[in-house]
Figure (cartoon, rainbow over the protein chains, first blue to last red):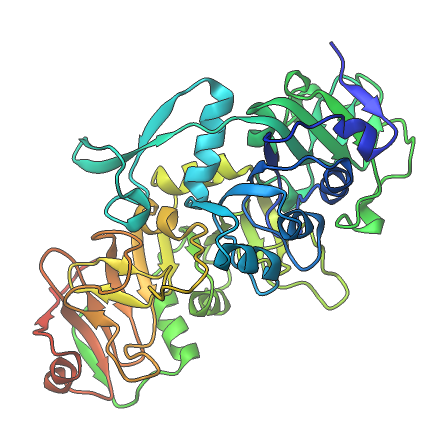
Length: 237
Length: 222
């Protein structure tokens, strides 16, 4: 099994249906699959449920999707930022549903989704407004809250390098949500700065095994330093 | 540690130094956004203290030189940082497992309110028209082996931030063990609030200011 390597972000994205659940990686600028979200903007899917740590910055593609009313619901830990004006306006107008999730719960719910775990008990959020109405249990003396898994139809992820088998290596703190989101979607689409031949990534250093990856596209991402981008077509790591 | 007092209210740098003085050599530490980030400047060189940032890095170093910023090397406040020798990167589920699993020794957080029992409110002002955001606050509050707060004792409007009961939405229940402020260091928990040190204020004046009965902390704690 190999990952399909595409020439453009739009081709790699493929068709996304209206109403799809879409995971978008990234924490701030690091790890944002900017060009894949731009392709989603162009593709036209609406009524989306987006799972992402943040809710768009400035006029970026996620912010524009929200502005255009194409995101029905967002599952998010930190939507409010200095430049999240499109989300803020939609939220205040009541035109977007927000499921606010503590960041660690968000990551673990996605991890559970990818691992076939239906739900788990966690101490995070116990006794707070974000646990209201949820099942609780005291385990080993610690009060815990039941949190359910999250899965998606499509995950959009940014990594640093892929090989033809879809194995991924990330770069610095851009790794963040990529490895868990890649496991939790029916289809995982990845943009990278470099695609290497099968066998060119040391198996001991693979972060996301290729089994989780469906589509790959090589792009010069705007959020990866030009100096950190390998020359296109470089053959070894 | 015995109860001591200083003549002067502490400024932010002195507060940060006071927090740093309680962090044992070799600790793994997470510093929250805001005031707690100042603590990094006061950790002694060679102390072997390792900084964790929840967006996925252990061994975080100081800000890069101008022009050396990397948008893919940032801290939880989305500010460019550096990596130190021995650093490691990991994904979000691992990062919060590290926290929630009790592998991080100390977490220093800012706060809007802390209760005498150690409840923490630091994510929401409770304003009905505010756009909410929580980030990692709730995970950090309950995860570290020891969660402490660094804050001014009074809000800008003069309202005490150490209270009998938090009135703002909670971040975590009974999770804070010590509060470092400009006017005093105070232990909190099931036994209530107990003064460790005061700065430019007497114990009685502190009780008047807070409207709380304050005990004295046991010596030798920590």
